[in-house]
Image (cartoon, rainbow over all chains, first blue to last red; front, side, top):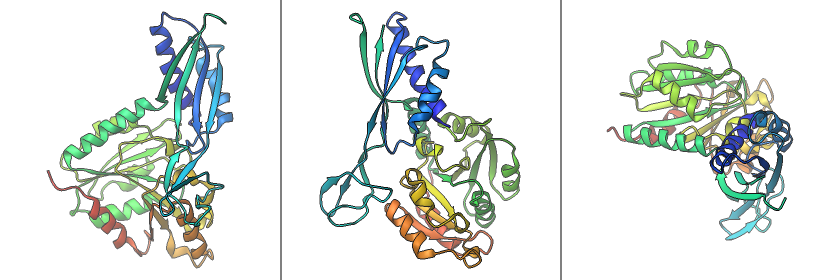
Length: 113
Length: 221
């Protein structure tokens, strides 16, 4: 359940920005979550209203943008979207450790009222 | 809605943690200290491995250990008296260590004179994956009693491993451990990782683990 601390970190940064902008309320908070970020979206949804309580983000909506995993196969020099836990190249079958995207855990954007 | 203001961030949610971790790593480098983050599920044998490692390396490599646990200092107590400096970090229910907890633990430990810092993370194969602690390498333990497909079940963490230690190898026969299947799972999920098979009880394979550590020690400063 480290999603609580992840939500809290995102809300902290968003609230600091909202305060900087004259204390406007946050309406929407958007996160980009890679499939390999190690977070469970449902747990974020569950934690979000709790960590927003009593802040400028209270009552705001959490929107998640999911980023799929992309790998590079070094022998083939091609990018691919892996299926399952073993990131085997669809052309040559060699498992790839070169993860191009999918580890994102980013505060993307906020909307202020 | 017309007067809503959109503010773009595109910053890591854990930017604060990442900054602190980068500062820790810079400090380790300045001091010529190699830091490993040791991870596994609860009961895979992290503390047993470290007990044996500290005893075997005593007097050879000045070592400090930070031990993370949800509660109690039982693990730190097991590791004391073996020639290393040991500090327990209790996370008060947190399921993983964060860089600020490591920072606080290091203030208690003191880094002067150390060449190796071992951070024993909270037993958990999920949450610690996201948090950089300033380590130079991640070591993931996976015991023969846990099932050959463990890496397939927890790929996110295994994909961050530099070294996978298959632990409790002395029990392999008793639990009918299917070695080829387990090694194939590790290789498939974590092709970047080196793999060693070890037993903290019999000492089997430990010379390779010690060699792995020695190769990574930084030159004395």
